[in-house]
Image 1 (cartoon, rainbow, N blue to C red):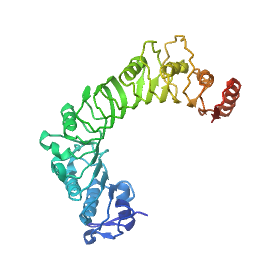
Image 2: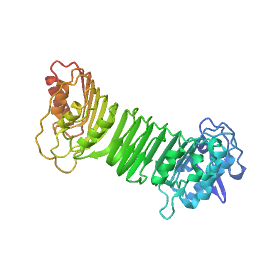
Image 3: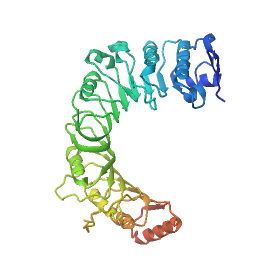
Image 4: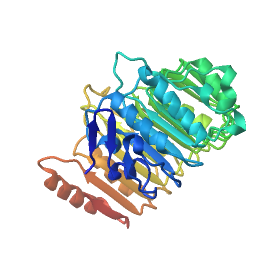
Length: 427
């Protein structure tokens, strides 16, 4: 069991705690306050949080930073791969955290991950000190992950960020000037993730990030303009005003997740299909139902997999999924998740569906299945109109009548399958 004992000014950490803080292959050394022996290499990973240090909740921030200071003071080795710290620290402990950053530079750390969420409201956020990092080739830092910090970027210290390969920011305020510095100072960046960063209303990521392959943005009510020649994966989580893609020839995977497309399905899908004809994977979340796509709308001519999460209203119609199927002639995999019923009603219009033969669709999975919203009719349609279908999985949603519904779904689909040789799995 992990133990933490305080005797006056001495902090005792058990061997088990030390093995957790460093990694399992590290030398097992007893750490006893100021009499600690130096930790010897090889050390590849240092992780500090309340559990690895104390095995329990409730330790003060002062006790925590003291423990981290003592462990780092005992580390003597040419190189450490990763330094992770997770605790509610603010700017009142900047002196200590700055020393940890300096330690990282001296130990040639390649990844720094600071998660300071749940810091006291009375304290300001810790400002990550880019100026402490070595410049250009002297820096070994390749991966930087910051949660609930600030990153006040300055043009004077852009060379310190040159070696970065991944930048992960969560709850780190970022304005347009900060974005401009990132795009100019991080030419080797392959992944950029920005979550809840209060981004400007128009986010422009243009040609400077030539190595960027993955871009993840979680924000609301913003427009995104992308021109990134080597981008392969784009994820947006939130409520976009507009998504514009220019010169992204390698972008094949788009995840527009937790985007409640309500009465805006057609414009969003039209923009994606028009700007990204090479798209192979698309994930969408739709509130209510899919709206009709006009016959003149652009098609997803390369799409292979479509993941849909639909949050239906009382009288929504899941057969509207057919609109997206008809717009995806080469689709091979459809994964449909049906969320819980939301408040409100659909527009109540009767819709007409063009019944196409989907010659490439091989695998269908429907989760959260209920006997409403025309879910059964959609399952029958898919079974009858997919000549290459190899497997259909239907996961019945939990209810007091779940066993009965599962049996009825099984019986009806077996009856309606006709000449289909697809494997039917009803769970």
